[in-house]
Image 1 (cartoon, one colour):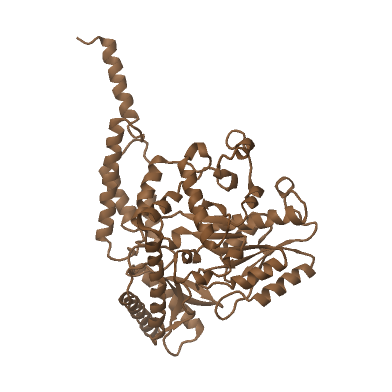
Image 2: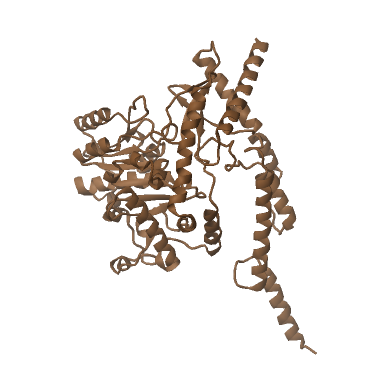
Amino acid sequence: MMPLLAKENNQQKANDSTKFSFLFNQEEENVINYKKGVISATKRIFKFLKRRKKPFSGIQHEKMRTVFEQININKQPLDEQFVMDELESIYLDHAVAFHLPKYIAHLNCPVVIPSLIGEQILSAVNSSLDTYDQSAGGTFIEQKLIDWTGKQIGFETPDGVFTSGGTQSNLMAVLLMRDAFYHKRQQHDVTMKGVSQAKGRLKVFCSECSHFSIKKSAALLGLGEEAVVSIPVSDQFVMDTEALESAILNEYINGNCPIGVVATAGTTDYGSIDPLNKIATIAQRYQIWFHVDAAVGGGLLLSNKHQYLLAGIEKSDSVTVDYHKTYFQTVSCSGFVVKDPNALNLISHHADYLNPKDHKDAGVPNQVDKSLQTTKRFDALKLWMTFRLMGTEQLGSYYDQTLELTKKAATIIQNHHQFELLNPPALHSLVFRFKPENMNDNQLNSLNILLRKKLFADGEAVVAGTKFKGNYYLKFTILNPIMTEENFEEILSILSRIGHQIVEEEKNIA
């Protein structure tokens, strides 16, 4: 017969086992729980793929807010079946399905399966890519992919880090512009003493079509949004380089300090690529930092057919590449790459408990030395798994297909008398509007705004919207290689139908 004390000890162990059964570890019960959870989640994902026929349910934010107002965060565990059913009703049923061909709005690509496999592994192991003693092989995988990206750009000895996205990468670029200028031109220690405008305001130049993150970065870094000088663009939506040089000279005349220029390789709205070679020449002439925001156009590095469009990018000092836009990776997965590894020393900070200075002297590869983040996801694993399982050539063929589809879509829009195409196909984006006869710009603006709103509420297709010279336009962003010409025709047909319904309703009201 078991002694009473032994019974109590065994009962306590059983209670402890149940208490910690949610932790991911080697215990048999925990492993079983993990497998059950993964299988349950996978079933719901399969259901999402099978059931979803249109990219959006059409639910509006007012109704969604009402649903969440009725949910209370629980103190005690809830039944798994209930939780998964609830998740399905409040999230999966309404999540925008980027993988469907009628989703053609923003820079959201369908993802490749190797990236999902990488996501599963990196989330479970949960490595932090800040120091080598937390990541080991993960550090070298990230460095290898940054090196590959840099070599594709044309840098001889590149360095850099994976980031959360283009906004963070562009922030790093403007930070290095600022700090490099102070260090080299004014011998001012901005890290210790802060921003100084005693010798003139710092100025950054980019096109009027550049990403908003450049101005946001200037604001965050204490320069102010007014430090960013917007340069006019041509009819092809690319930076006017004569206007750029004139603007730089004007700032010198006004006693200010030009510190860098940002060229965009793939603008968000038009896919346009600034004249990189000409901008590089100007940047070199005035000895200012040259950054290329290739968050969108970085996919060209995969392409044997179209990589020439990035000619001149190798002359830059730094580059942003968003793998989660044009490499078919899950969010988030982005890179910031520099030509001169020493430039990253400007933002290094050594903490004794984490990455002491002697680690760097000993060659220990701590990614935190060159990162704005400390704790950092192992997002590089997703791209690594994609390259290893697919190869860069096959991935590049997916990318090339999206460029060909964009050209076909442009032709279809141009041949459709009810639509007006604003921009020629450069990369993935096409800006256009529904344009019935005998309507002025104000009427067309109201019509196209309402058209997109009604389309979104219907959910049959999802397109984006933007403005050009104060007028409202619709936008296709084509990043799905399985789309067909029939898909474009169908989406335009839906837009036309809804547009004509609006026109008729307005006539009846009048």
